[in-house]
Image (cartoon, rainbow, N blue to C red):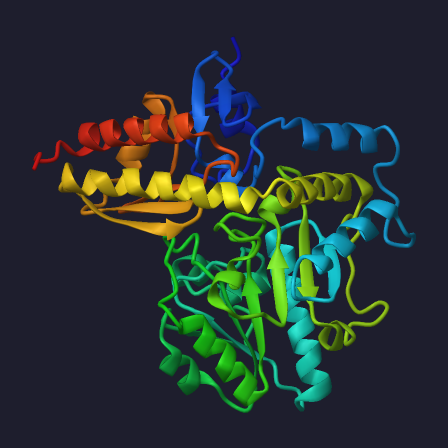
Length: 400
């Protein structure tokens, strides 16, 4: 029998800390490994599998498109690309779409667009303010934007032109703003930072500051978009609108995709030849995105998320009464983290997996859930049962 883990160690770069399970197939919220073991998947490709695994709407669209036309390049037009762009514009506050292949590419596109706008309209202003504990990607521009020195230090010198300020601190943003500032870029909820929510009024204050100083507001909705937080876009719950938005993850329902959305007067600053991608907007990715996004809209998936979130968060918070080590439950929609009183999250995740649940230790002291958006109540309850047992096994807490 092939030892697939050993084979991975032999042939692949060793730049991922993988869980020791080789997943072979999936259906809905469940996956199976090569040994036939079944798991509830509450990682969902890191908030990617919006409708779960092998959803017929997504697989059907991919199969149909693959049998028709896979790739043509952006030297030509294609219907799926135009149809998805139209749907995104009709269901957001923005006017134009650029398609790419990932969240990192979307962030890079947003940075480049903001810098071009600053070059053309603000005398070359180019600096972008981001938040400490943010995560915007691992390519060199997105890495420079990311507010985490642990990711950055081995790759210095980084692309200049970024200032990192404390999250939830509008005064720090005001103090960091100079004549060279062109934009502020934030995640509406910091996903990789630990599922850190914005303080009430924080993002509205940032929007107001951008308006006062003539700056662009870029929202990185790579992890929060497409219904994940209980509204189609997380910005809707804050009563604000961005000037530029980066999307990816859940938009393709599991298929690689990314997008930059922008206001008309900003998008107009990228002309022919100023930016591009070989594979972005390819018909196969567009068919997957169109099928996924249309299903989310037509079936009120954000409404389903709100109901599921109420159930999940209530159940998780009930653990605070029984387990001393559970210190906090934070999140919105189906992007939720359980805070722990010690750095035991990796051990908890291991115990979850042994019991048939895949979760993510987003921080040393926090376990993150981000299941498919159509997860059932029974699956939510089962995941909570497993998590509670796993925490008890990993920490041997004192029962209240």
